[in-house]
Amino acid sequence: MIAPSIHRDREKLNLMKSIQWKRAIAVLAVCILWLFGGETFLHKGAAQEVPLGPKFKVDPLWPQPLPDRWVTGSVGGTCVDAKDHVFTVNRGDLSPKEKKNATQAPPIIEYDQAGQMVNAWGNYETFPARPHGCFVDYEGNVWIAGNEDAIVQKYTHDGSKLLLQIGTKGLFDTSDGTMAGAPMNSSHTLLNLPSSIAVDPANGDVYITDGYGNRRVVVFGRDGKFLRQWGVQGTVAQTDEGAPGVFLKVVHCVVIANDGLVYVCDRLGGRIEVFDKTGNFKRNIVIPSKTARATGVGAACWVDFSPDKEQKYMYVADCGDEEVRVMDHATGKTLSSFGRPGHQAGQFENLHSLSVDSKGDIIIGETLGGHRAQMFRPVTQ
Image (tube, rainbow, N blue to C red; front, side, top):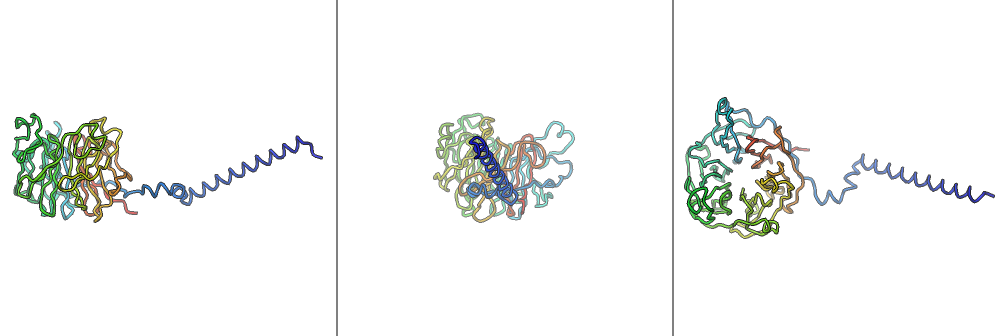
């Protein structure tokens, strides 16, 4: 007969061995799953909720060196034509040293897909002060705004002729007509520090974010005559509540998407406000950021879309966090991002604007500190 104490010890030993074997089997199973794709299996639900978006890699050889020791200064905007040629809007704000040992590049430089300069043109004296944003319309004309001026200009593709000017240079939509006056947000003929342009290919209507001085989207006909406007100065409380049609600070960009809706950057408000073409509010797309408002920079600096007909992906230049957000257009969810603060290729210093060509390449412009354009190409699997 086995003593009770010996029996209990054997039972305890067998139980401990059983537990150890179960643990070993569990660890082995996890290792096998991990090695053979189990990470995807284990997180299958999360992967289905937020699928990964496209990936991008910087092209370090784009653009090619400019001639004659040209230096651009801040790149206030980028835009793309029907041939996938890229236009950059350059401010020519060279450093003191660059003014001595380099040459100020023209305001507009046109590059081909390989980054070779195709054309360069413009006059800083007659251009909008501090050029900001550009747009190539469906007829190939190039539009430029200026966030220290009161005009938007339309040029032929090669810059040889000024076709239209909206506003009067140096005369602002303010209480006293100067840049220092109180913004009126109301003129049918004057602007106040405009930032970007979009032209409706259906009828030629011109949508302008009159956004550094005023707080509106203002629409003119193809002849430059006022049609309508919407937008007012908002408060932090209104912005946090998602109030429609108010802008916390700079109204920074406007894009007309394939769905016929107008996407407007409420830069410091950290959101893209979506309207129909008459200004009726449709929805908010929030660009969450921990640093954008604290730094006074904002998160929703620029927006553009993937080149497919449905424009499945939306790309946002988050200038506060120095990254490009890859977002699901339909849901507004962030899928991924690329970029980080820094001065090396693929990093950003004052990320400011972006545009997308027909191949899905993303071209970004950097202002103070960055002073460059960069090309990010899709990574094919």
